[in-house]
Each structure stands twice: as structure tokens, then as C-alpha cells.
Figure (cartoon, rainbow, N blue to C red):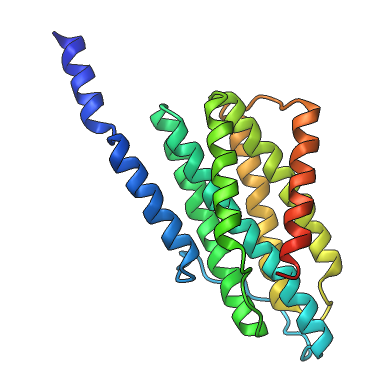
Length: 222
């Protein structure tokens, strides 16, 4: 009797498949709407740099557009992985990480507007592709899904370091945002490791790097 009661309570707490997918659609629309709101204040530079030249603004805009696409993909990945798992604690882990990534999404949107640059025209495509990848990762099991998070965040951290080396020295605002994003991504990887992430095989890591290169090269311009 107690077992049946516990199971009934568990089933009542679990969202239905329809509710889950409706929530996923709502999440996608909110991510792509351009109306994301950060919980944390936008990171501010300790010292404002000089005004950017037109070439510097174009470079910063292109790099921040790529970073914004990365955050669109992060939202899709975490949402899909949360849908794919039946582990309530892991679902909350993904939801918490996605909320922190929402700050990154809002910060990069705001900075793009300040630079007079636009977001990627292909954001719906990036979201859909990342969502499918997240579902596949989630279906491989919780440890593999967490391992995917670790490898993704490690690659993103390296990518952000590359942007710090390329951003104009005078663009203190973009640099402050990227520095905080880089620190947050390292934290996501560390928490996924603590949660029991499995190491991904080398071919999977190579494939992930190749896919990321295609995305970043395209988003730089489109």
C-alpha cells in the first residue's frame, strides 16, 4: 500500500509528456524572442575604455554574436537534456544551469544592441540543432549526458578565452561579460563532474569540436 501511494505521489509530481513538450516550446519561444531578462547585473568593466573605432565595433559585434549563439544553443541543450532524463534531481540541475545561462543570453543581447550589431539570423536553426543533440545526449543515460555537459563547457571555456584574446583591448564592456561567462562555464563543468559525469570518448569530443567550428564560423557573419 505504501509503495503504491509513493508511486502515485511520484506520478503526480511528474509532468505529463504533453506538459513537458508544451513547456519546451514555450522555452524555445522565450529564448528566441530577444526579450530575455538577467537575474544578475551585467558585468561592468573596472575602467571604461576609449571609444571604439568602426572596425573595432564590427569585430566586437561579430564575436558577441557568436557568443550569443552559444547561449541560444546552451538553452536548447539544457532544455532537451532535462526532458530526456527521468531523474528529478538531474532535471533540477539542468534547470539551474539554464537559468544562469539566461543571464549570459541577456548580457550578450544587451551588448549587441549597444554595439549596433544584430543577433544571428539562423538562431532558430541553431536552437533546433542543439535541442536534437541534447535529446540524443540525454537518451544515452544520465552519466553520459553529464559528460556531454562537461565537454561542452570545457570547449566553450576555451572558445571564450580565444575571444578574450581577439576582442579589442578598448572594449572593456564586452571583455567583462566574456570573463564572467567563462567563469560560469567552468563552474557548470565542475558541478557536472561532481554529479557523476562520465568521460566522453575521443571521437565524440572531436565531432563536437567540428560542429562548434561550423557554428562559430557561420555565426560570425550571419
